[in-house]
Length: 528
Image 1 (cartoon, rainbow, N blue to C red):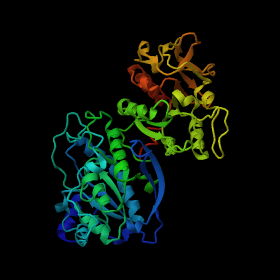
Image 2: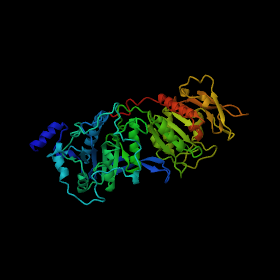
Image 3: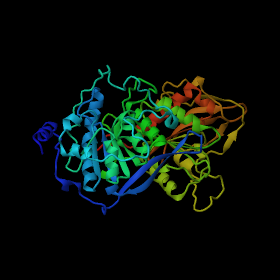
Image 4: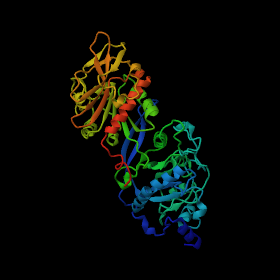
C-alpha cells in the first residue's frame, strides 16, 4: 500500500483491508435465498397493488451489493443520526455477504479524493469501459413516464429536524462503522456498471441512503441499474428517506420512507430485508415505535378498497405502519400477500364471504389464537362464512368467526335506503374508543345489521335504530376466549367515511386495539 493510501486508511478508521481471502465463497457457493417482496397491480389500471413475497435463489458469484452514500456526516443532523443507527447492522450484512462471495461496492459520492490510491478505489478504476444496454447517465432523475411523481414532498430538502438544519456538503468519506475489506471496490460513478459487467454480475442489492434521492438517482443506483437490465432489489430496512413530516402527505418520517419503498416496489424493483442475511426480524430505527396495522380488504359492495386506503393515508400515517392486503379480483379464494398479517400488531378486516385456502386460514387462526387484536367493519362479521354453503375442497371457511372473534350473531340486515339513527349504549360514554366522537353527528348510511344477541364478554358502545324495528348494537368491543380484544362496527358504508365522527371512531378503535396488543415493539422489532 502506498504511504498516501495507508494514511487514508488510518484516518478513515473504517479498516480498509487488503486480504483477498476475505471474500469467502466462490461460484460453487450455496445460493443466496432471498425473500423478495414485489407489488403486482390487482388488475390493470386499478392503482391497487398486491404485496407479494416470493423466494428466489441467487448465485453469490453473480451478485453484488452497492452501498449508497452512507457518509460519515450529513448536513441534516437527523439523517446523520439514522445513518449511524443502521450502520452496525449494515456492517453485519456486508460481512455475511463477503463470506458468501458477494462483491461489495462502496459508493460514498463526492469523496473519491479521500480514497485515492487505495486498492479498492483502483479496483473500480481498472474496470474496462464496455458497451451497455442503454447509454449510461451521470445521474438518473425522476422518470415521469414510468413512475409519475414521488409520494412525498421533498422540495424543502427533506430535513425532519426542528428547526431545519442548514444545507451543505460536509461529508468526507463513508461512515467509519462500515468495514472496507480487501475484495471490495470504491466508486461514485458509472464505473460501478463497468465493474459489474467485467465480473459477470447479474444481480444487485442496493442499500444506503436516501431512497427518494440518491438510492434511486445516482449513476450507480436503482434507476441506472434497472435501465441496464440487471436484477435489482432494494434492502428496504437498510435505507432511509429525506422527508420532512411537516410536508405533504403529513405523515411520520418513517411512514414517508415506507411510501417511497412502496413506490420503488411498484415502479422499479422488488425489496428484501437484512433478515435474509442475518436471520431474525428486520431492522427498525429506535425512534420508529409505530405499531403495524394490516388491513385485509376483500369486498366489492361497500368500496372499502377505495375508502380504507384513503382513510389510512389521511388518518393513520403519523402513528401507524399500515400494510394493505387486497383480495384477488379474479379468484375469490385468493388474498395475495395474506401472510403479511403475521407481522402485524392489529388486524383490520373488511372482507365479505371469502373462503380461504388451508395455508392462509392457518395463518389467520394462529394469529387470532395468539391473542392479537382484531378490528372489523361492516361485512367483517361474515368475512369467512358462506352462510350454510360448503366450500369446494380444499377451501375452508370459519363459520363461527363472528361469535368467536367479534362476539356477534349476524343474521341479516334490515331495510335498505333507511338511515339509521345512532345513540350511546348505556354506560359507554367514558370508553376510550368514543373519546372525541360526536355521536350526535353519526348516522348509519347503510342498512342496519341484525346482530343480537351479543356473546358474553361483549361491551356495546353504540346502538342503532330505524323506525318500527328493534334496536341493534352497531359498535362494541369483545374480550375473546383466547384473551384477545376485538372491536366491531356495522358502519363502513362509503358515506360513513365522509363523516368526521366515523373516522374518529375508527381511528380510536385502531389506537385502542394497538394498546391491547401483546407487547413486543420495544424488543422484537429492533436489530439485536
